[in-house]
Amino acid sequence: MSNEISAGPAPAPGDRLITWSATTSVIIVTAIAAVISYGHARELVLRYGSSGWTADALPLTIDGVVATCSLILVDCARHNQNAPWQAWFLLITGACATVAVNVAAGLSHGIVGAAIAGWPALVACDCFDLLLRHRRHRSPTTQPAQPATDAAPDPAIDRARELYAPGLAQGRIPAIRAIKRDLHVGTPRATAIRDAITPVPTHSAQEAA
Image (cartoon, rainbow, N blue to C red):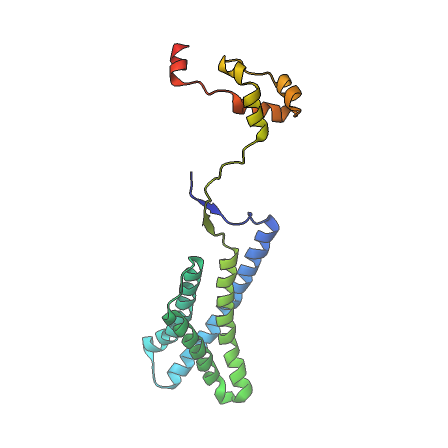
């Protein structure tokens, strides 16, 4: 038997549809914003003298830091662990760097141009974080199964054992009707009482039979 149980009921079909629709929308918006942000960062790198593979790879280090740190934070939260301070520090630094690079790429077109250029970076960071948080809260968690506790003693069973003790000692099991009459209980309760007071055959008795 497994020692873990899922926390919470299974999501309804409508909830699954909403979840996957929201996830798909966030992925599309994040992908579009990330591509635009990458283009702005690459343009800025080229403007300041870098070229070749350096200009292609350097923008990825900025957004890559944001993605990596976000995944680490979500993984730590799912396992009830404290995230390392480096993850928080690099996440904030990477997000600020992404927005700053995009704003700088649009400064040549004035304040409006800087705001427009910085918007995709802000959307990419926030949508990616929103996606991870959404998946984190929708994912089922597991909790250790609680050990079963003994049921509270049933006074009717104790009374039945006392009442039918002489017959039980001789191997006579009381009938359901007699239990219902003597203890004033219904058929299901009488059946449960008879099962509880019926002696379990021992190994030696089974061999003798």
